[in-house]
Length: 302
Image 1: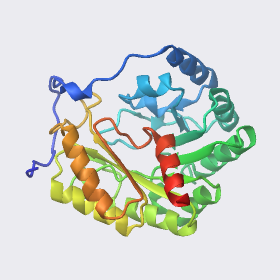
Image 2: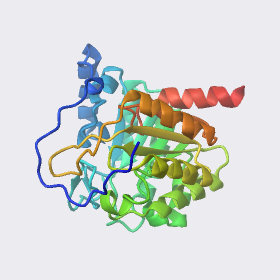
Image 3: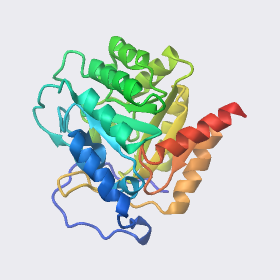
Image 4: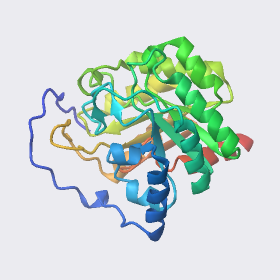
């Protein structure tokens, strides 16, 4: 993989034809059932709001990644399709509605993410905790993975999240250090690493996890450095997937990685000591999260 240019601007351009390995299956009958339960709950999903390419597959299997605290974000990232606007106040009954939807879907593992809520004094940390508590009451057998924003690295807010007791604390690095100011303008590369390190240090039994998108203009050397930085932050699990441009107003795809390249990069990451690595064109931070968690628990018990 050769060095590729930094993204500096992205005027509206015609969509690029996707390579053949980036085709997705059609919905199954269970898709409609999942969609109905989610619609009844009134809770947003990152599947829909972020235009995830795995929506059809995951909903057809009865899985979804819920997005709490509304569907409007206080930040504007160049890769993300979630709307940037002034959010509504947190909904007091959202934790119960979320827990009810999870119980109705009979989920074994749930991923809960949220828009960034820089407008709130605690950036939504207490709402995350309330959601986790509601799920524990309504669906006590479910394992919980949270995917929060960086909370500006505030230790008191990370403490609230960890003490709520999720099995997995997931915070995405998203891209390499050089590209972070371009595609994550309100985030900081080192701050994300610090969040993962701090969360992991608070609970030795909790798994920490992070994800990186490929195709934004990074080099192989930069990717390997990001892997090493995550391991230095004691991150346990890494996911890697192909970045797909949500619209002409977002950062363009600089290149599409072939499936074999994802395998090669996964091998390099595993050599650095990650407990688990998921790498492929359609891998996302929450894709096959239940299977990934089950694999980690199996390996831990052996």
